[in-house]
Image (cartoon, rainbow, N blue to C red; front, side):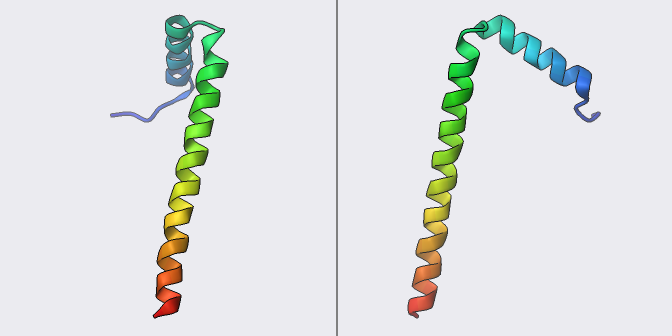
Length: 57
């Protein structure tokens, strides 16, 4: 298998544009970013809890 190059990324972007349309893409990206932020915050919270329990011992 080859690596993902600029041509493949362009093709994927074109397919996404055709499937969802130009108006839905910003909404989808906003939701994706929000989900990634929540995931990062949740995983950071788990690290803080595990570090806190190690410090207490």
